[in-house]
Image (cartoon, rainbow, N blue to C red):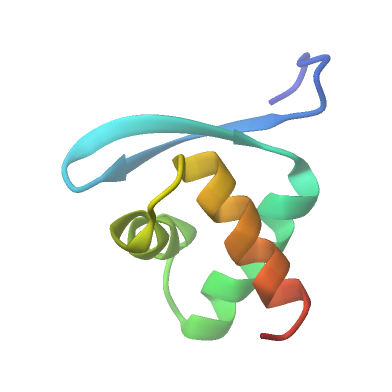
Length: 73
């Protein structure tokens, strides 16, 4: 989000019918966007999939997912 001084990009999404916002570093969003594109789904759908399987806070789960993607696991 322009103007943020913490280096995070905040995105608003609807997950399971509820609006939520997630703030991640732009590099993590880039990996998530690319992973969603490879799967042929919107990034919001990929985030919802990660949300369903998580046992940690959503932002952390998304960072871990992105790391796994970047490492090719």
